[in-house]
Length: 402
Ligand SMILES: Cc1cc2nc3c(=O)[nH]c(=O)nc-3n(C[C@H](O)[C@H](O)[C@H](O)COP(=O)(O)OP(=O)(O)OC[C@H]3O[C@@H](n4cnc5c(N)ncnc54)[C@H](O)[C@@H]3O)c2cc1C
Image (cartoon, rainbow, N blue to C red):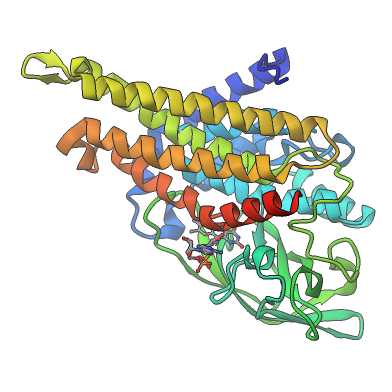
């Protein structure tokens, strides 16, 4: 059974996030979205203000100076941030990916050092770098023999990393303090067990930031190429210590210090986009007169709004169920988590597309929010593993009973 009642604390945090998003993000999001230079669009000021509320340390355990929030509470925050701007939200998502791994897989010393760097002082962002020009991040999930091109070779007490990484969310921003970078450590085999993750300070020599991608949507987030040119990382910064095990991104059997599951969390982002599109379309359909009648009174328009409402409610129910599962069970339920990512992103794309349709020609004009939401939505079906790939993974879990 799923209990959908939120606690007093969850309601208060949801309200705080909504007020912040509406006051600090929403009024400037469309203007910043139009900035041509992707590096200039990144809103440093908004993140600094958000650090004062602690969103950057939301689910870091209290032992390491964080707020220790659970998955469902973070999901609520994500939906509120994304309803104002998905680019701001995905910056927190990229940060969360690096934190989740470090919290669950880091050694005690690594947690103290790297999580401490986030929780102490004025606050910062982090980034997770997995994707390469020729290797998608989730290929290792479905192709067990695949290996990354970025190599980490042990020389004395240091690993030397060489390779190219792309699409790194938060890469190279003035607020980014450290990265989790994945690289191949065992050249004799492929698959997850051939790789390790490295904790790397942003100012390390050999970590070179390349161009920022000029993206279709989510333009308030920054994505860059990273060039690793003889990047030297002390052995002590191999996440979890040097082991013959996976880079741990997909490790199902692990003792978790945070119940937050990033595949579930990204569902909050998609829900935020969908909600914003639905609300805009509903307002518009009530006031737009077509041949003297509000367009919502035309049954095919009304039905679109009804379907948008139903789809958002259904997707949110699944996301909350997945978050509750994550908060109350020792292990993630991958089928639920992947299913949440797939369903919420499909709903975000469908709802934002229908919102443009309801706006008609005006929906195609840049001055209207739904145009931006449609662009923001598309990538949710692509990043954090393309939906097709996650479906293939679920199918294999169904076949083999995982
Ligand atoms: C805005 C943005 C932010 C990102 N942030 C990060 C980040 O912070 N860190 C990071 O490491 N990466 C990040 N990425 C990379 C992202 O995760 C990848 O782009 C994504 O997972 C797809 O990988 P790819 O681009 O290599 O596509 P490919 O792997 O080449 O796939 C292309 C398409 O082929 C199809 N496909 C792929 N595999 C299968 C399959 N097995 N079966 C059927 N169809 C399939 C899908 O339709 C897919 O969209 C980001 C990307 C974007 C656009």
